Length: 229
Image (cartoon, rainbow, N blue to C red; front, side):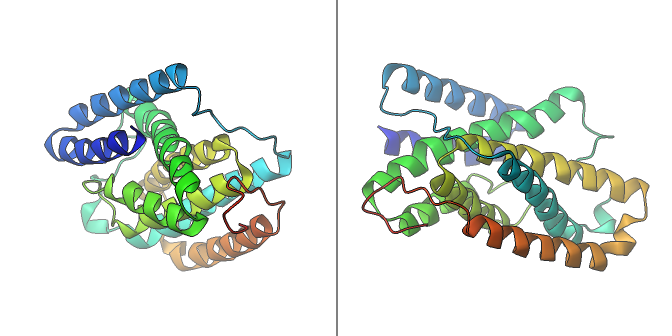
């Protein structure tokens, strides 16, 4: 059931994103409702929310902002100015969809629904890679290279399995999407792009430090037969 729903979700997401953005939104909404119904009627799937420290939440927020900065700046093309999503060309509804609805939907489906299922069947490494590939394919018709959602999918999968808390992934995703829009908005109204190299270097250092800190944080093993995270 989960495998069928997941592949149906990815295939329909790619098709509807290609055809029409509004159709894509209603597709995401439909699958979100299906996911909620699945949880209600099949209690085997639950929302993981292991307790975490306040410091971990701050680390995730800080990391997601640095990650957004590191990926957005080098990919910004001045010839496409005005085409990027900013606070100036998006209304409140689209801001809500991009900054809240999509992150929550994708994390519930890809991490809490699909990755959790994969991890029960195979090793941590294989399950994270497969879920990241699906996450990347679901962004096939977005305006970013597929390697970026793939890398994000690897990190979010690792984060979910390590700390067993889906809300960490949701917050990371929300902050990341919001930060990308904020950075695009600042590029169009300030001279932040002139500081690109310095900002990328600083954000890279922050990313490396945070990854080390997260790695040595307490470990959580969801699958007893899987290797340690």
